[in-house]
Length: 350
Image 1: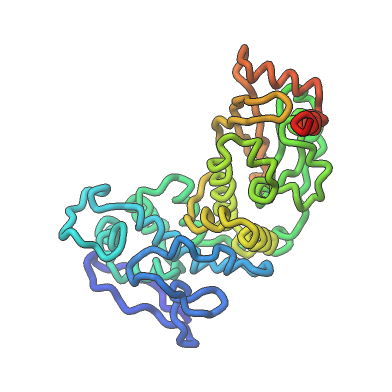
Image 2: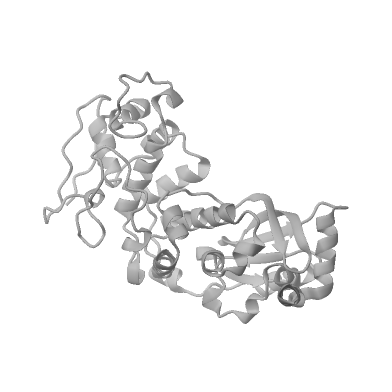
């Protein structure tokens, strides 16, 4: 049985890494399939180019302890002593970012306690300690929630994870009434569950794709036309990976999510790179710029509304500033409907 972390006075010496019953070390010291982790400094962050899908191949669940370990290391690595008001002693630091001793001092816990937590042993950690560590690491609200999900996971019934995602009939009818506004509903794993005619005019007719392909990770990383559609493709790609990371923290045992991450990791180097950053965020609102094959460039704002009766589903709505060229472009797209993307692509080929 894994020993549990117990708080102690700040400044204790770092304890030796824990060993599991089979003597192979903690999850922070090995990969999910039991192979020793390599090229990792004892006090440093994980290698950024480690294969992102190594723990998710063939739909295997994510290793929650390894995820917790690597998330904490990555957040610690981005901070410098001067960022948090600590003096920097000496010019040569063995690793980038804060040392464990420095982070433990800021959080008011012992070095041994924080070390065990960073090794993935978050069982029995209190909410107060997590709050203190989140403050010390300067975590955002989404990052704080992600840390809590990894350290104190909720139990999810397997049937809940596996059941098909359903959109209420009334919501589909609502989408249809939004005639001049692109809108869609997303669910778990960034799956696209329902959309309206204007959404098809802007993004293409997802009804022509198999249900499995109606997923933002597959669309962005595996379909070249979306690189052309999003002028800020890199930002959109980063957003999608951050949303998936957030979902993975809530549902590490979801086999479909694991399979998705494994598949896209194998097929996309950009996805692997972004997945290894451990960045997380929740979708809220913002601005996206497009280059549509029929109407050219347009700038649209989007808003995200979590559905009250199913918090894992969100309604996403795009709109243009009134009186702008983008608003006129949307009106033109509305006149074409779902044929707009095909018409634009055909025009590009002539």
